[in-house]
Image 1: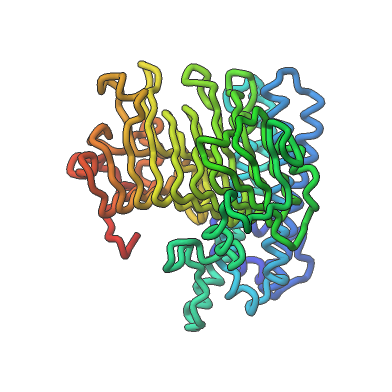
Image 2: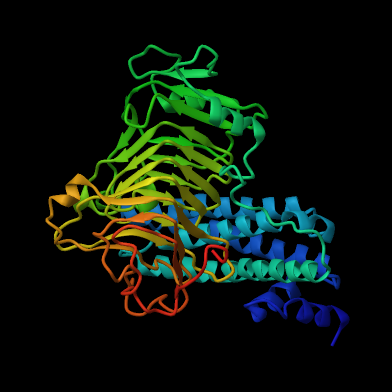
Length: 491
């Protein structure tokens, strides 16, 4: 056995998919033997496989014959491009997988790699409920090796992380929240802006003003976004005046340091009504999508008015890393808030919905907010969360802290006939924590609802910590292996 083959086998030892790892490196690694060179090779292999899937989606798109399949294929192209970007960002930040760079970046690496995996899975999710099963199977086959390779990179990150811990190097973990209850990763300039921004003050000088009545620089938000200088290092403040904005807002990947502020979440509302029943994918139903990292929004409302009968209908979808939403309101029914990927923080917000209305695989903290459960259809049940962590090494998880969970006035009209649950496992390793929150008595004593059969019941991670209110009693909660009893310190 050659030195190169021995090195590959040793390198692939800790990963979850050894055969995929070894076969990929035998093709891409050449005569490489060092862990650094092999790490570079596995990144290249993963990116190459995703690019192959992008090419495959373009070929399959020529065979499309219905709108939902066409939309799923178009989404795959976009999502897989995002996955490639996040792999490249991971590699660039790592400086070629040098150990000195690794110790300062491990949390970022896990975030970006988890996002890359989630984008690949979302591509495949788009084919559910389509009639093109052959197309879906072809995409799954193409993506299978790229997903396994990306999961292998996560395993390697974990292995390197343990090596650093054994060397007793200084801590390099990044806490999601700092002592003053705002994310530690938020730049000082945005912290000050978050604390001081007030559209009514004389010192408030936005870079652009949007007013639906024409009393501003632009009449629509999308017109204003089109004029923002891409990849700017300076913070750009957009003031959106009170009014109802009937548009589908898209914040693209090339807009950096964007801050969007308004007069209040019930005064300034972006509204849409797209739904799954329009023969489009769930992702494409969003009234607003935020792609660019570092986005900050204050005092705005986003809604999807499609209603219960139209099923999945997203108000806000976010994949922006290190994004913050403050004093905002998100209204909808099924799938209101799609916390898709990356690190997100919501504070002092209102979220309304019926089924799975906080869902996705972001590393998300929702703090000091109000959850209002609306009335679902009579043959349905309400579920607050559906966290989508598919891989055990993924960084995704939902933390709901210091929340108040109450019935919406619509729900109260049902006379208590409809059941409501805290969450269910959308993906196998779903992870959700409710911490120090007030839980209303309308929550079903079981607390957690299965997705289908015993799927995810032993592998999910659900916990309730120091909650209060009439619905906080855990004595009759589901007894799955995945429902944990933990302390605040452990959480």
